[in-house]
Amino acid sequence: MVFTPETAVIRFGTGLSPTIAPPQNVTAMLARLTGPDVMARRYPVEGFQWFEQMMRQISDLGRSRRNQPEKAREIKDKINVLRIKARQTQTDMMGAGMARSVFTEDGLRERLVRFWADHFTVRGTKGVLRYAVSSYVEDAIRPHIAGPFSEMLTAATLHPMMLFYLDQVNSVGPKSVAAVRNPSRGTNENLAREVLELHTMGVAGAYSQQDISELAKLFAGLTYRAKTGFTYAPKMAEPGPETVLGKPYGGYIQDLFHVTDFLKDLAVHPDTARHLARKLVVHFVSDQPDADLVDHVAKAYRDSGGDLLATYRAMLLHEAAWAMPATKIKRPIDFVVSTLRGLGVEEQKFASLGWKEMRNAFVAPMGLMGQLWESPNGPDGWPEAAEAWITPQGLAARIQWAMTMPLALRPALPDPVVFAATALGARLSPALLQACENSEDAADGVGLVLISPEFQRN
Image 1 (cartoon, rainbow, N blue to C red):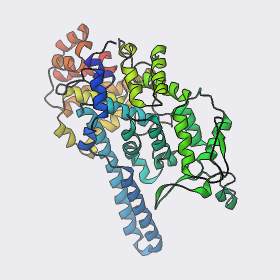
Image 2: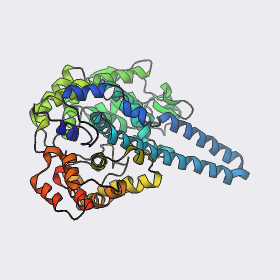
Image 3: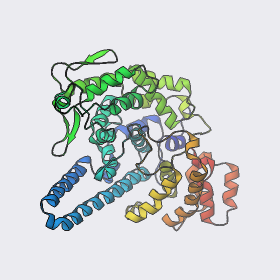
Image 4: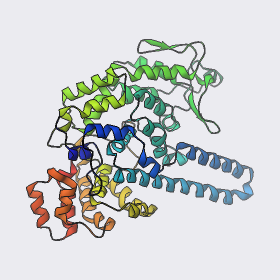
């Protein structure tokens, strides 16, 4: 293994910093990952319960509006105030998420949170849920990144945001009590398909359309109710056992444990091990992953029964994980975060940025770069391939942001030569160093570093 602190913090973290020391070995990286979640305490993010309360308030106001037409305008204004508050909360949560990455000593944790949040992609589809993605990540993803994969899989699958996003909340078994009472209701296969195809076994997994259909019946009953939140509704569930991947689940009595039993089995399936190993290696190391590295990571996953910490350790201890030159292109969020980190932006100044400033400085530019905040195109999340990010429009947006935004965020820019050494370390090439030395001013020099291939790659 050719471990270097610089590669550790650039490839597996959030970037070099002039004030935050990188980890000195893999043991230190994993120790931080399993230690206290310092940044979550420093920059809190609202859990989904906050949005549930918001939805209940809006629902109650909606009923009042229907029952008191003479107060319709007044009540409508109150509803709009709550919706604006939810949108502002989304921006606050984005700022907290970015701050965690910019100022952390535990960059691997922040990168893994983004990786798994993307793996279990959701989008808000209606009302204030449009602003609740970060709360889903805080509840279902972040607490489970270093534990058994089965726990994260279960938390994400059963979370209301996932149920709404994949239209699971109204799915009923074809022979369920609910379907008998209302034959127009049917079974939705979205969640079953994505759990197998995206979240676990992968598109090449050894499952069939029959498995998807049977799993959709097993999932029938997973729903959400305004007053109680997530619930399992037996009257929506399909009676009798469903056979998925050759094994029957369920029986005469319908209960949630049949679903969780299946998810535990699915989490340790060999196809799941292979799919997750490849995704991790592609995300962190290379779009064309080293076959031996993928095999090594998959074996560690299988041997540990799906333990994610053991899986990360296997990846980080394999020499192919540290191969150079770097080839992975940073996604816009990682480009922006590593820029702020390399510049040494003051924590107090970042925390003081308001809603409109966050939108103008980060949300809108990242959208032009191709990554609109919390809005991937589909349930498969953001693309990994370099060509998806280095498009004419995306590259132009990166250049524009690199040449203008650093000066706005830190008026007293560092000397370009010093910044290049700080942000790139040993990756700094003689040609880029010479360009920094010959730059007309600090803004141009810093911009040259940011748009350089050395900085754009992990």
